Amino acid sequence: MKALILAAGLGERMRPLTDTTPKPLLAAGGKPLIAWHLERLAAAGVREVVINTSWLAKRFPKALGDGSRWHLRIRYSHEGDTPLETGGGMWHALPLLGNTPFIAVNGDIWTDFDFTRLPQRPAGDAHLVLVDNPPHHARGDFALADDGDVLDSGEGRLTFAGIGVYRASLFDDWRRTIGDAPGADADPPRFKLAPLLRAAMAEGQVTGEHHRGHWTDVGTPQRLAELDAALGGSDRESAVAFPTDPAP
Image 1 (tube, helix red, strand yellow):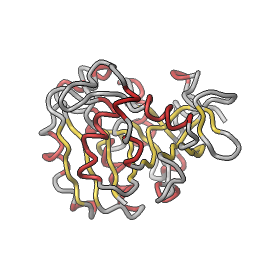
Image 2: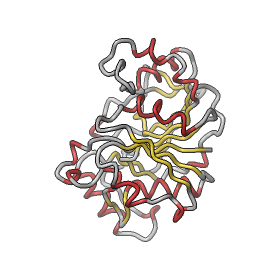
Image 3: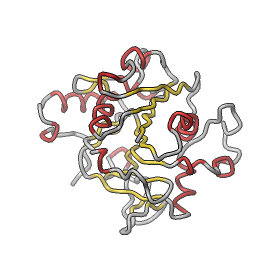
Image 4: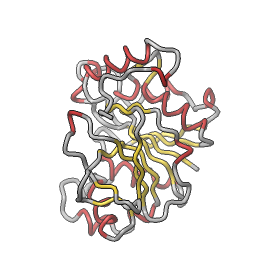
């Protein structure tokens, strides 16, 4: 199973830290955020990882190389100077990911989620990991039904963790779904993933699971500092007290 790490964002909310360093390469607990993902993906049996890049793209191969230190093969999907958004970036990387289901994870999160829990062959077009809503995203994103389906609306909305398994078929009708949204007619196209997921949800093609462990959206310098302090204060991840953990 291959994996895609989404790392092409501009990191505007993290400036000035991201003036010279892409956000996924910022350090927490003594290593780049993206390195935590590479370790967990390798431990889960992934052997090939695609990293999409844009802002300060040359920093990634300098920092990560070919992936051999993690017993991985890293390939890079460069998007040019303008990031292609989540949907466009994933679509652009499909030739490197192939036709079998693949894992995708946001490069700017930290989590103790065990990637071996993910289905290698999701029932539909996508399988999403959801978490309790953090304070900065109290309304959540999607609802998780008792039967495991993910819904665009409903009671008990949860936050999308930025982790999922996807089939290339999710993009079969992307142009009709995206319509005339800004960037859709660019070459390569630039569009968000959420409209495709919502269209697939309407067809019952998205399943999910609720991760109740540690998860942090490293979206601000303060959250990065809190995460770094938490990870640096313990030799065991399970003992870390995370300031931004969802309430039990």
